[in-house]
Length: 378
Ligand code: OSB
Ligand code: MG
Image (cartoon, rainbow, N blue to C red; front, side, top):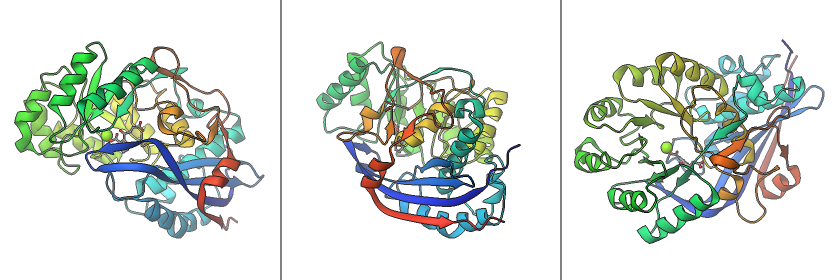
């Protein structure tokens, strides 16, 4: 195996304006603040990664500020103490740090990209992917009115998205979902509550249960696996977990309790690609189908989502939309941008590492903060 020596680690804090505000049960995002990670190898080769934490601790306790702190003050020093930074070994190097999965994952992504570029292999090849195009859908935020929602959904359906996920919360659920179902009876539909219901909301959840949805994502509190297990027995719609599953161990617990029948796999949420590959292997063995979730990533993070979605047990369309769905003027920070192809798919790049070109000039212009850390490798 090739020794992967990393000389520098560089952090960037970017602010990228979203094309449209994105509203979920926990609030509205107008601007995507994001931490990018760049690693520089012994020979000057680089690898890029992205931390999926956002500006506020709403989806997770992590934020761009906690991720910056944890990478600078804890991950970088731990990396300095080892010579070989093979991405599959990296989780052990940082395992002393409790939690902070998104911070850990952002650095691991960069190591995978560096490895791919050094070995001339694509992420898909490194991960053991099996397809050249991945099936995707679009995640639609909460809107001000049903009319507005229908307009937005029509636009996406016309653009070619073949599966729609609607964000729901108490007060924005049965009405909007029924309306979309009526307008687009043939478009597979699923909902994501981002942990906004209680078991006492069973009557509403029972109404949703009648609407022939592909799945209901994270209806209850992120810590409430027992509640999800109870709910699973009361609904015929499959329960998919997102926020609740932050590791391989949590996945086992959720499975053993009967709290999920589908997994939304987000590599940032579980601490990286290595953990994601372990979860994928176990999900295959257990017969729990999965799909890949998104966190409004830039084109860099998106490359990792696309590559993971090539794995065999990814059996539902993933939340990986085209660059144009997220970014307005100026566009994405990679070239070519991610685009939607035939049958609601995205083509998997064949080039080394992330397989798309990183636009450093544009990243420089969008950077609000920059930090270069020299790793003390022996
Ligand atoms: O719960 O899946 C989620 C975005 C930010 C935070 C949480 C979620 C989402 C999405 C967006 O649904 C999916 C995407 O990136 O297109
Ligand atoms: Mg979700």
